[in-house]
Image (tube, rainbow, N blue to C red):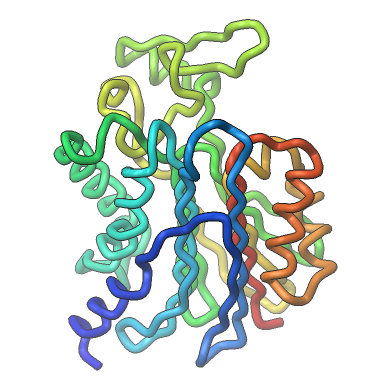
Length: 282
């Protein structure tokens, strides 16, 4: 299969609405298994989380494509990301030689497209955490916002992403003419509105926000057990090590993802909860 056909197949398999649901899958060439669970939160708005969890053949290699997109002020932007972000990454000519640069360029290109189509997509935005696994050997993780990826190595939790919180990036926000509010009983917010300092979309705040991702790379080795991607609906009520400890007890990654979501609900998380668990070949 040539590269164009492979790319078209990627476009086809990463679509589809994510809602309160769960599922699982596995690789063909490599013994990678994954499962996901998505639960609508108690907030009085429709489900705003979208996800990607697929293993596809592209460029003669097996790629695991995993992502969580946590929307705010509607679901149009995370739906757009689900359809386009991975496709834009794989379109980059230097993807195989410089994945880091390709991811950065694709994040920027995608954000610009969202802003250009704000009349259709609305004024909302989305965080994102994405993971690309190449032949069960090389893992690239990127994020904007507070959705998080956590790796388990010999049972120890290793955070692969950076939570982009307004107080942490106050200098950047203020240098762009914005401000960070810290009202009693509330989290820090950009211009009193958004609880993250980086996001896709959010046209009204974009002049004070960033959309460039933080990126981490790791080789998957024999002691690398699993990867958890989740929206902040999970991380607000659960520490990284707690999540790893729960997931490691269950060999089936779908059951692990469902258990993590259930535990977040038990801890009274009110936000939408989306979780993907990837188990690597040991």
